Image 1 (cartoon, rainbow, N blue to C red):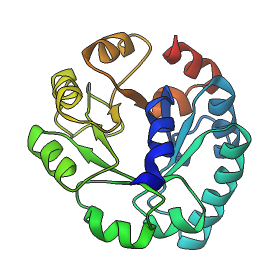
Image 2 (tube, rainbow, N blue to C red):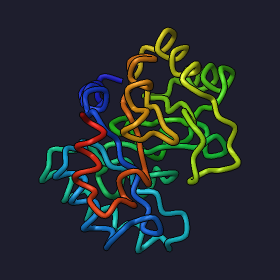
Image 3 (cartoon, rainbow, N blue to C red):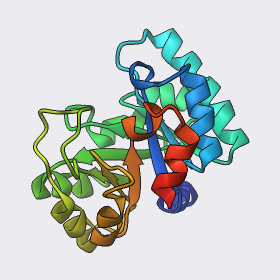
Image 4 (cartoon, rainbow, N blue to C red):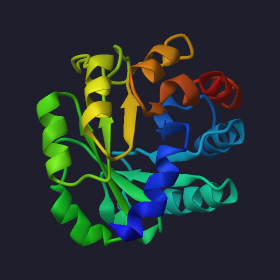
Length: 210
């Protein structure tokens, strides 16, 4: 845990966490990633479920180089093996991905491991598993995952009361509602299409950061 203390503090202070998926990008994926970092995002997550392993690793390594240039964190979705090979800062696991203890055996002691949660029970389970951070949501309805029930800011407020790890608020967050999210409890704001689908990703980041 001591090895992950500094990255966890950096994550908590990152301000904005942007999920990168090429299918949703308004332009070339690497250009969109660079623009998000130039706008002030300090954490990127690579989320590409359909790529073959070699291409996924290539992109992770390219993003590792880019995030280092901007003093930003890199998280890889689902794949602790790719995260470790790319020297990322962490891996994000969904509800149906590996148990955290098993992911830790692959990722090693340095990488942060986050877990998605949508209910108080799932939050309890993630904290019991000793997740290094928890993602809670969706805060609002979202076109990215339209069938997911909305957890709302109530779950964020509960997480802020109970968790002593960084909390990532995700789902349907825009410049119009980000204030309500931040008012609900301490959190790092996470967005996807609000930034990467924008014709001006850097401007979208600045609008969300206020």
